[in-house]
Amino acid sequence: MEIVAVKYIYWLVLFMLILVANIFSDRRRKLSRALRLIAYLSIWIPLILGAIEIDNLQIFFIILCSLACLAISLYSEGYLRILFGRIAPLQFIIDSTLVLLIMFFTAYNLIELVVLWISIEILGFILILIERGIGNWNIATKYLVLCATTGDISLFTWLAIVSLSLGIEKGLLIGFNELASMGISVNPIITFLLLIGFTTKLGQIPLHFWLVDTYSEAPSITTAIFSGLMSKMAIYGILRLYHTLSLDTNVFMYLLLIQGLLTTIYGFVMSSAQTDVKKLLAYSSMGHYGVMTMFISFLPILGEVVLAITYIYILYHGIVKTQVFLNTGSIELLANTREIYRLGYLSRIAKEIYFPVVLGFLSLIGVPPTLGFLMKFLVVAVAFQLLTHGTFYSLALLVGMVFSSIFSIVYAIKYLGVYTGSYARETYRPVISLEDTQVISEEMLALSLIIVPVIPMIYLTIPYNLEITLIYVLGLVVLGLSMVMYRHAFIREADVWLGGIEA
Image (spheres, rainbow, N blue to C red):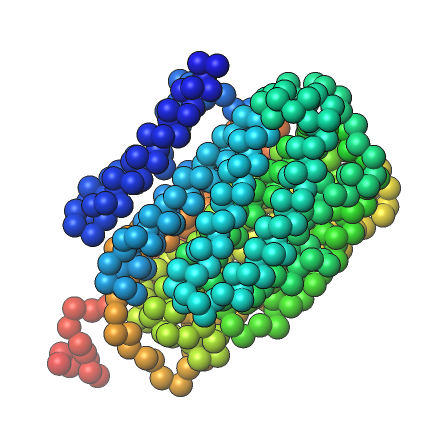
């Protein structure tokens, strides 16, 4: 009980920090940023001191959350100031959502998880409206009805099954680790109901049609929260569900595998056909959710290996999609369009964010030493390991990875083409410049893509660890040399020369 009380006190302090930070957000900017920095990184203090109990299932979600929340909060400050001239009170809605996400991934029992899930979904509805207001009402309503409501069905089914088995009070308050030891089994129909809400939040076919409209029409900050963090709530929910209840194995495997495979193919094929940057990235997210869903379906036969690589995928997708969706906000601010073939010149007018974009591009296509390389290498390795369990499983994952790899290159090149493709006939000079907090946010996320791979390589047991480490180090060396050569190749003379005569 003491640890629970400490956790609630910490949650209260977290909210107070965010509240005070937003009171001073327009008047004392440096103080506001300092308070938000403390808030989003403070989660590690009670965790290290043992004041808050978490298990191995939560740690990588919290790593992602603390990093992405800080980046989104910093970026939104500059974004809102450019659009509206001030950031209060919209910044408080964004920060409140981010704080609730940190709480969600530190939840101890079902009642905390359900209450926080519903609270985040309500704020998600509001976040869709923060920029265009009533103009996004239909999109927000579709999200609430299709995505949030379906998720609630799974959550309340989960809550009902546990309460029927253990009693209402114990079912609500029992910790996840203790619940896992109770051995509660469910039949195939209940397994389907428990999973369908989480797969809907991941935009899995056939309940996928809310995702692209929401991701493309919502403000870029909202989309970064949805794709980078809120989608991970569904992954966490499936993993937590699998470890606390004895689900029907056949329904679990085949539902996730079939939905994942169909969504992977559909998402990546559609992404390559888009000319709107945001829709391109939205379909890409759907494709990645499909791969993650497929991968989780192999938990009953591969166990810890699948779990370890799922953690890496969570970090990869969460960081890179937070970065690129925030970057779409920069694109709209600078060019007032998201149409790829009207762009192509942004590297000449936004040099400060070009390097982060290149690192994001390298991670999307899986080039070492980025986190994208680590993820794709391991998923393909596991696909071949599945041959010992059946050709169908291995073939399904390999087909998914083929679509992922090929079409990732296609849409990643189109995304980079926004900066270097020379699509536009002329360069449009922006009437505004990005705020420092926006540039810092994008740089921080981009550097994370080459630093974060060290964490799973050290703390997780993954196949081919030695080989991956060698490739990673070699990739770092090549990346460093490339940056040095790039800088030297583009050094310009201080004076202008014409035919050898100083001008």
